[in-house]
Length: 640
Image 1 (cartoon, rainbow, N blue to C red):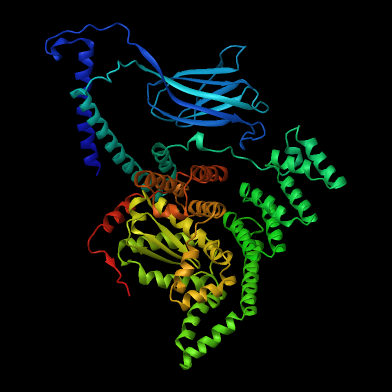
Image 2: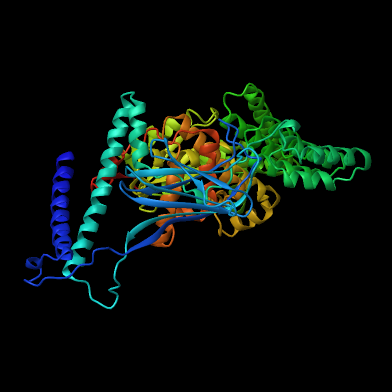
């Protein structure tokens, strides 16, 4: 492979040299390259300033970087060696300070204030290497100053003459062909570099691997990244103007039971954990449990790794008899904080509440006479003394007993139906590959009560789905359209997270299936809606925003823990967005919307938790499996 790439390098270099000589010498006036005619040239080439980055930002004094307790925002741009850039930052609130870091993270330049009368700073520099540069924006006094600012990065380029009214010349066509060759070469070079980095990583040289990964991977886009909020647990950590407001909010609540100051404080300072806790407690004392649950839901979405918030949420959900939701909340914490000293206690809480939910569900079934009816109908079927209507009713009634069996019962039922109806790939490299990745992922999921199974479906759509109990179906299109092992592992981690967090099971329950069994029985009597289809449709309803965030959160944590690049799921979302843009959307999008906000949220998770983006990618084996999928002898199961 390296020989072919090197051969391409020489071809591209030769074309580039020919083009540069042909264009450059003509411009300089060597007439023998232009049919014997000489051309006059000016002594000075006109230049123009081209903006390569323009962003607005907000610097917040109350958000500190953990390693030095200063406030700054980071912006990133890619540039080439020898490029001259002018960087300006302007604000109406503070004097910006700019620090430029090279691709290795070394300080190579700092800004100067344009004038004493302007809150504007500027940095001019000629860059010495090609790569991605980081720019830190802070205040002159970075521990106090904050406000809005505008940032612009521009470079000088030769001023080109407009040729919009002319047809492309042979020179332009050659330039376009060379550009296409360069893009193809860059794709090949990226694969080669990632394969080299993977080899270093497998052999234990993670430092060398990281250097190459950093060279290939683009940094996260600063304009899409939300401000990371660092949680505050001690009132002394609040900014000075916030401390008296906190004291006042507590006093007003204790003396008058007025929650207005406390509500305003929590809204204004969401990073302060005690504010959320006190507001939720106050609502519960006023017997406004739903208000308390909403406060805790918003707080845990911001800080899902805070133990005090999770415990408060679990207790509030228990008080509302939402045992399944309480189990999910506790289990999510154990998955993202496996080393926390209280993880085992929360695991017990999750299991306890799941059993409570199951018992409560079974009690509701018994009270409605559903279980008894199922037993009676089953007896009729055994002795053969019942009419056909009874058998049909029995098929409808099985819904109730199936729900009582729990997640694994539902998962096994629907998996059996799908295995009969879908073109399942029975054996081969792709089946072994998906099972290997899936079994590696589930080791870190913390649900040993599931019998995990992974199935490959011969379908070109980029799609996957998980059933309750850990039954996961992955299309061959998902393997073909992902770019690496880490990206496919990210997809599997996300799907398994939905199963582990009981999202599909909750879809069935929260849609009041057991409250509408009469309609289900009527459907069965008329042979209009088979039992399996009823449950499958409920499981495949769109996941809500919170469920997607929970699966992203757990999936990304598990991906990082298992040794893969932590941005595998993030990169999958980028791939999905490209798939949607080029083909009008993939099947995966119907239940897993990949919004810009969601991509930014995953970026924030990776940065806030320090997950490693520069770990194993796995491009070579992934490409090998992709080639195998296209073989005509791939073993597909027959429908039964």
